[in-house]
Amino acid sequence: MSINTTPTAPVTVNGEPLEFVQDFTYLGSLISKDNGGQKDIKARLCKARCAFAKLQNIWKSNQYITKTKIRLYNSNVKSILLYGSECWRVVKGDMAKIDAFHNRCLRKTCQIFWPNKMSNVDLYKKTGCNSAVLEIKRRRLRWLGHVLRMPQDSIPKVALRWTPPGKRKRGRPKMTWRQSVMAELKEMGLSWGEAQASAKDRTLWRSIVVALCPTGDEEDKDGAPKNIKLCTQMVVRNGLVKHDTVVTPDAVKTSFALTITGHHM
Image 1 (cartoon, rainbow, N blue to C red):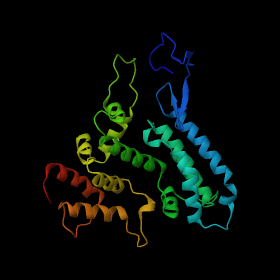
Image 2: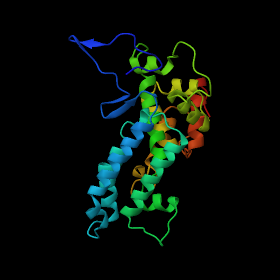
Image 3: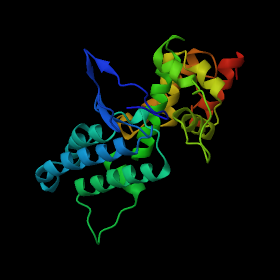
Image 4: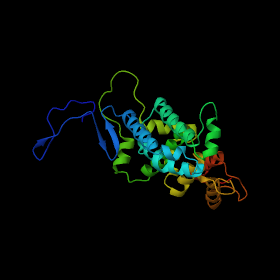
């Protein structure tokens, strides 16, 4: 497969030429010539749809409680749906398809059918889940932290800051993975430099990602989010806030600047 170029000579291995293809599967992900994630997302949706259909007897059964069904869904369906999603370069249309499939599966799992209605917010509260978009966002940030902590000569880090040579075609340029992540960081009030500095501390970065993108699995029996407790311990240990301060996502954003500048509240 060649991208934005025409092969002049065949590539041979052990004297046999390799076939040029439009796409191929590598480690479970579909790599396509257009350098996008649409084909891989379509394949993930098909595989997740088949996995969900094979468990129809469980979703329809009244012998299992909702909590057990959600655990089965997370382990057998959602894991297939979001496999490799941290590396996807997705657009709003792709996000909408993934989120629609995820919500539809949750409603079937909870046996919510027409004419019964339930908003997505109530559905997430009932199941303890979050939207698929938020799951993908969190996985992206986790992977970004891993890449930023890698050595400078590592392949993922080189690819993160690499700019392809040559002249691009006419028209609007495609959104890259880095640009999509930078846009998400901007929505959270963080700059690229702040993210690079904070990712060096694994505990700090993990706490920030969990606080900004919480999931329903991070609530204990008392109903208090574990991510807030973790962030409180982190910032108190670093002397950023007082012990009795309740750490919110806004406070976590503030701790970025405090950590970089070395000041205290």
